[in-house]
Image 1 (cartoon, rainbow, N blue to C red):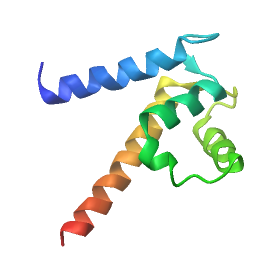
Image 2 (image 1 turned 45 degrees about the vertical axis):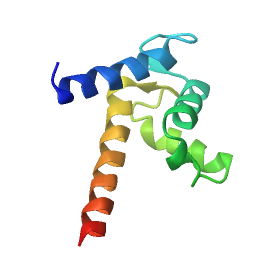
Image 3 (image 1 turned 180 degrees about the vertical axis):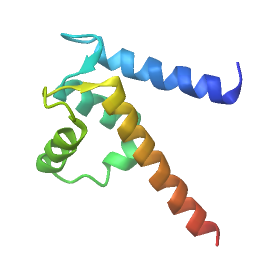
Image 4 (image 1 turned 90 degrees about the vertical axis):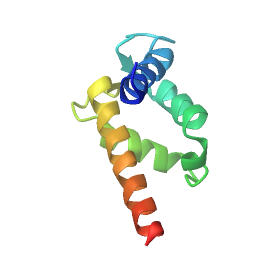
Length: 94
């Protein structure tokens, strides 16, 4: 597999690893999302200081209002964070 294919498979695998823990295996419950963020993005989460910030994040991700995060909503989050990281490092290089 190419680097990009491997990256895509990894993102899918990480989502499934956490979504399969309880309930609907195609959606992340709030606790599953919290665990995923803390385990898989620890450097980012080091900047999150309180539960209300996490609650706000979950609400903003939950486009359909079902109190869960499906794969499309998760990918929107991953895309936004990736774009922000790209912008940060692009500006840092200059």
